[in-house]
Image (cartoon, rainbow, N blue to C red; front, side, top):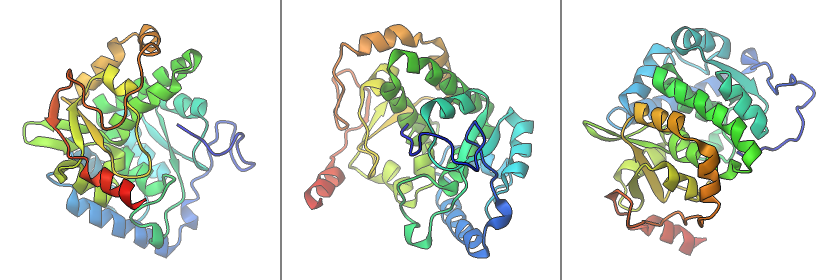
Length: 288
């Protein structure tokens, strides 16, 4: 949950929102969005959780071109009371949590360049909208995101933001879910990435472990490459319930007495779905 600026730029409102400026997107930018959309839409059936694919459909995100946030928000509001608001980039943590707690999803309004088609460091409109917004049409996941925002605001008074950030990372960004048809993707960082959409489910390298809230809050993560460990939830209802039922204040205090866990760690108490070889991570480190 890092941010770039310490104050909103002149064109932003006090809550950091800005106009999307949809009318300023070029034909080339709309075409690049369509190229990214077609590539992922072809890849994700049978890989992404059905609720995500249903969200793409009901929000009419296949209509072509970069979505207009105003029209997208109208459809989303009718379903779950959420809206999409544009921001100038990564925003301060308190701003981010305040928006989530009030059912506003913040999205960058810029699109990557053709040279960045497979990777860029800062999330763009494709990652934010294609990756995150479809699941906000699902009532249970929509409630989870609001609960996360409310929890984030509380976490700031306990100095535990770095631990709560791990929950967002391993669920909202890079989560897997167990279904009757096998493991499926729901994390936005995976569904918006061609490479990680394949890696997360097919590659023998990463660990895939059953979700445990305490375990996730102790586990470090990496932001610069494919994940070394994925956590698998049994369903969105269980994730929401676990979040709502937990008193995080004593949990944060308890975790302060325990060491953080390295990314590739497997504990004797873990439910191991896949014990990864970690070959990809070792190869990346060797080539660094």
